[in-house]
Image (tube, rainbow, N blue to C red; front, side, top):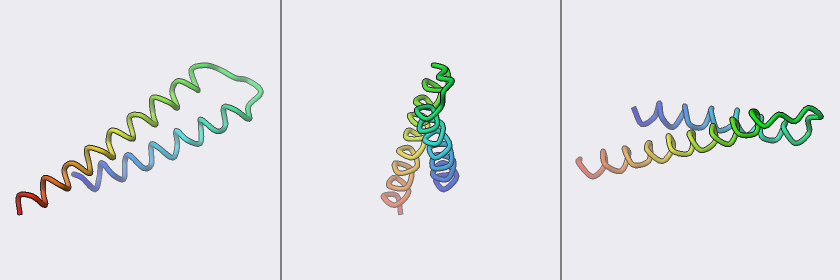
Length: 62
């Protein structure tokens, strides 16, 4: 489960980062893209953090 969360988090973070950077180079600046990319990066960061917590709990049990 932790590897899935880590992979999911990294993929979503990279996609959101791409949208975030593309927003600044775009001529058509819609706020929804900006807020969506910020929300996606925050969501991915939470998934990565939960993955790290699960790894530490798993190592502490064994």
